[in-house]
Image (cartoon, rainbow, N blue to C red):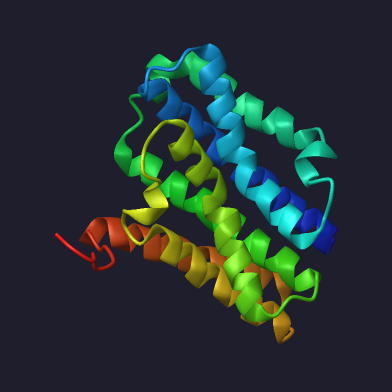
Length: 208
């Protein structure tokens, strides 16, 4: 079996996260009552927003979404699935949607951290950039929809991304096998996110 080169591996994982976030963003937009164009726009920004922020902060310009047609095609395809099959996908159980969202968060977090390490950033900064990569699109989505971003209020969302990105950054910095490190970082994010939802974990609030 031919091994994926590091750049191809990151691209594959990045596109998988793009597809999952596009579906999630499109569903959120449709539930908010947006029209077809609005659903496609929100699906797009949810899917690629974090990646654009990541690439700009790394100085990797133009961002991948503007250099590789696979990214916008994947993002708009996710939105189109929601538009065309909304009556079907809106009934997908929450127990399915939450793991999908956790998987997308994990994929973007580990890819962001890995790209930062490839650009010779320290593990701490790489972990922070991986977190931004994971939550950036969702923040843009929530702001456009007029709400407080989920990352600021719910279920240890950003902390899960930070944990997985941190595992990835440290593992890659110290030479652990790339595929193993990416997989471990993703598992950490998914497990922490799902356990947080299951147990109702939230960070302490300042008041109230």
